[in-house]
Image (cartoon, rainbow over all chains, first blue to last red; front, side, top):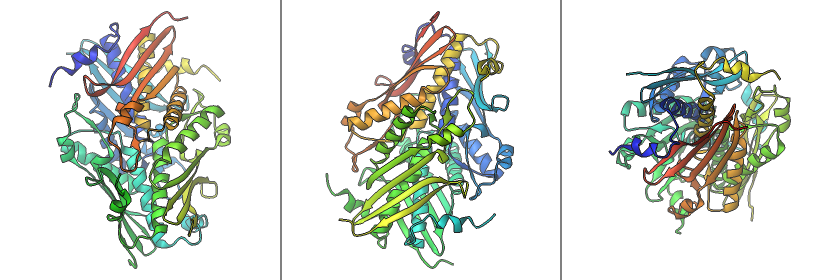
Length: 134
Length: 134
Length: 134
Length: 134
């Protein structure tokens, strides 16, 4: 296969740095993960929750420039929620704790999405940027 | 928990039979599965495909009145498709072969969704209905 | 175009009646609508809510054997919910009231999905079946 | 409402610039839009396509720090595709041309997603960054 990145880069604004590109690629995956999987039926059974965490992680890691995608579904929160008449729940943003590590050039960006009680909001943010990674 | 089904049934047209109800419940899950997971990144790696099949099956089985949900992602079809520049594919309807077994009263309905080459269409259909199940 | 239905019908269990087929087709659309649009950002602005209702209805009516799809987003419920820090909400099942009218042969099935306070659940059900429709 | 941004900012790596934040916020919406709406039934009817473009734009603009979201569904591409037996299509990434304008502080970032024939891929990229916007 030819150098896809060389072609792709031509579409980007020339001023975009490797830091910015790493953040860009990671943020796409945060937004994608939320909107792809919200609504999926889940329950209190740990094996089902683990299977879903695993599948989401592995599939979202396939998006370009990803080093790692970690997904945790907050089982404790689900256990505390009102018991649903048919005994399952649909996955919501606040149940999810997602870490996306993207890499571009020598920059590694760690992005995060998790429910922040203080805001009562599922916040997406840039947790850490590491430069000069070998 | 009180008898949820007794309450739910009051909302249904009185003429609805157990056969019809079993079909209804299964068809919801066929439509739901397609529209929940289409767009998920996948690839030729068998372990990733298996993890996703497993997670989809297990989560969709949580919907009411399901006996079994079997999901097969057609890896051969994906392997034959044009190689994508970033080497992954987004899941499409034609990649999926889904079997939903729903049950209501003594009726078991087996519903199916799969790509039908003759129609060049991903068809959903009622494959089998069994009555007087114990 | 050739008779697609004649081909499709060959995949169905021979015992499936027109009533059952109408219910089957409608239920697919109920499940599909829920899982396609849950997670969409919405707000208290009536024009945005109307635009989304319109788009969902029109697009889901394209699925086979649909006579009508009506979607109402419960704006009053959204207005009563806790004000979100960034002042928008993500669409959830309980916000939706969906009516799907499907038709097969001389049978018209009206299917419904709406939040039922008594169950504290978003119930999908068969509201009405009309036979011998001209 | 209190200053949500002041609280949110505390979660971000301190080195994140306004440029990076604008890119971050826009990229979330690109990933979100793709994965929320892929799979939606569409057709060659211009009114339906317009209704969907409008609804997607308006709803995704509700995400934080968005100035504008423009969505164009490539009707010409859909018209050229093989006629589907039931005469509708499910929305795919390559049908979409999305422009997201996000703003943070004095920085405006224009992000884009569109099908690039040269890559045979639906590419997301940073089209333009403007600084010192009033």
